[in-house]
Image (tube, rainbow, N blue to C red; front, side, top):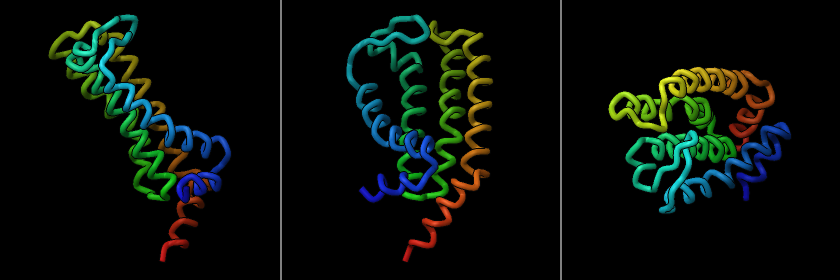
Length: 148
C-alpha cells in the first residue's frame, strides 16, 4: 500500500499512469503466457507461433520493462525510470532479429522501420519527462529524505 500512496504525490496523469502500470502489467504478463492464439499485425498465430516468431518475446519484454518501471517509480527508485525509457527500444531488438533471421510474417520491413521511429521518439519524450520534469525530480528527492 505504501507504494500506491507514493503515486498520489506524482502529478495526477502521471501518477494515474503509474498506478495503471502497477495493476495492468502483471495481468498482461499472465495473459501473454496463457496458451491461446493471438492476432499480431493482422496475422493470426497460434500459441507456438506467437512465441517462436518473436512476437511473444517482443511484447513480453515491453510489458516486463513497464512493470519494473512503474513499480520502481512507485517505490521511489530513481534508476527504475530507465526501464520506462528503454521499454520502447529494447523490445525492438528481438523484432528486428526475428525479422532478418526468419522472415517472420508478422514483422514486415515497413513495420520494422516504423517501429524503430516509433520506439525512439517516445523513448526521448519519456526520458525528458522522467529525468527533467521538476515535479518528477522533486518526487524522487522527497523519497531520499524519507529514507532512514
